[in-house]
Image 1: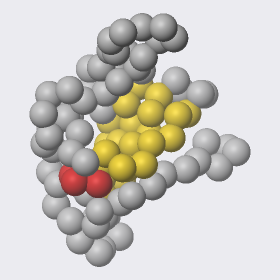
Image 2 (image 1 turned 90 degrees about the horizontal axis):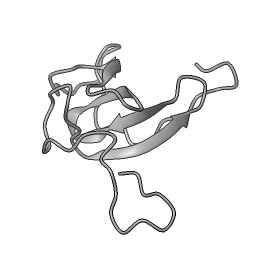
Image 3 (image 1 turned 90 degrees about the vertical axis):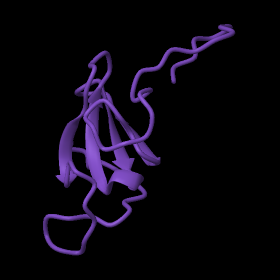
Image 4 (image 1 turned 60 degrees about the horizontal axis):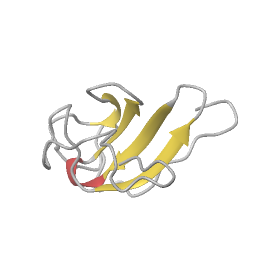
Length: 92
């Protein structure tokens, strides 16, 4: 949600289609980082076991890490309930 100063209501900028694993949904977003270089939110999508990038104004997210279907695990390609995100000074 985005709330402008003095506004009585907000605007959905990411998610808003109920919880799930689809590219228009978030499921228990836990950690959020604003990347000013790409004007996007990097989101630890805990319930879907992935990290996604949602560009402000876009209608869908892009998968950065984990599985787009919500599968959890402990292998090099799966995540299990990610709860935070951060980027280094180079945007990695």
